[in-house]
Image (cartoon, rainbow, N blue to C red):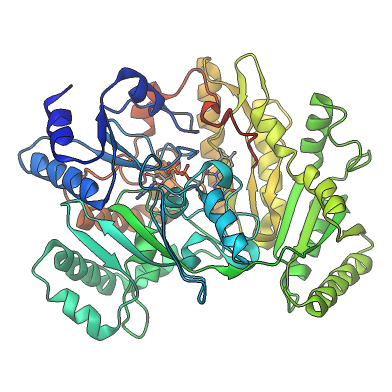
Length: 545
Ligand SMILES: Cc1cc2nc3c(=O)[nH]c(=O)nc-3n(C[C@H](O)[C@H](O)[C@H](O)COP(=O)(O)OP(=O)(O)OC[C@H]3O[C@@H](n4cnc5c(N)ncnc54)[C@H](O)[C@@H]3O)c2cc1C
């Protein structure tokens, strides 16, 4: 055991491991990268995180840098929870629901809590957390906050950040702060603090005031965006100030979250699901734009395309037999309404059906659980693609997440076709069409140099197109170690410099998950690309996507 590990074990309540097996386990997430940490810490409480951060800070003051990476369940596609220093593994101990206020639905939780477990608990109180990711059964709430995760219901309810009301965060020097929206008066108090927290408030406030005009460049016309930091949401026009939106989606690069307070929604298991089939991207987009204008917005508009259905059918001819007939439509949409009031829901459904009839689109309506499950089978068929492999050919992430203004959806789908032409394979598309957000996982053999080069070629071309359409390279899967490299192109060099300044304010020694989001060097990372990609952390689950 190294001296650092010894020191930590002596001072922490939680376990410290340098076992090669543990280090190997934590050397991968669901990204294409592998980075072996030197030490794994299983914190038992906030004090353990503070001590670890304080120790790393003191070493950094003496010129020795040991990075700290927070980790939930490690399902990140972007390499965001990999690091070569200390990995703080939260699910082992810091996994409790601290408080559930049954009157308001407010919950306070530790970051390592399994998202699915939380959702089940909330359901028993007729509440739920709407932006749940498809990976909820095997991921944590801390990871969802770290990534600002979003899911099928985010069309109506927005991403995770919309539900986080406050956080407890361990700063890079080991100090603990609590974030929430502060009035102008409360902000002034913070500005007067002589601590690191005070320094952060002073520097950040100055940065925001000096670059007000530039903050607009971060404001893309898209439903959600996790590229960079959400700097624009910190200071409001009334002078109120909140660090919460900065930490949400910051992938542990600004501080370590030790406690999360979230608001929840009332849960209505009674929903109505419509399915509709389209022969062109344009007609599907026209319908989506109309549906979005309804006075009662659908709770989701999800898509799969004909390529996905065709591939799944060829892999398993029985999978979709009872759910959808051939020939497959170019775009298959699922539209859900979850309004609590039955009359409101019925009216919204009627209006949606009117839209389909006006556009001469064939559609079905499903209210029973059994009929809905059949339709969901079609949307969840994307999981077959993720889990499928042929020798070393795997569905790998890299260009898996992109979002554009909804009216640009046809162009985005064409950009995907272009990727397919470049790599010589049909590409299946699925995702949150109602928000202009699609996912793709083309097949590559990462043990072949040619395939790696091809992945990087299409990566650049694809995200250039996404940007040209006014979109973002990161909708909800975040920047991590891959899309972080695109940030200077996404926001321009000056925008990127501003983001780097934010990072520097919170983490002057660059010990909080360095190489994620800011300072990403894809060239230097090439040796860290896994030659044998696999979703091995998910083997005891059937992944959804
Ligand atoms: C099959 C599949 C489907 C997916 N579907 C979705 C989806 O629908 N929507 C979506 O948004 N994502 C999705 N994801 C991506 C990922 O699962 C989610 O973002 C998930 O919320 C991450 O949770 P985790 O516990 O695995 O976090 P991790 O992967 O462990 O961490 C994610 C990030 O959060 C940071 N982090 C973790 N804990 C803390 C903490 N305490 N303090 C500060 N930072 C922290 C990490 O450093 C890392 O940068 C999917 C992934 C897979 C494999």
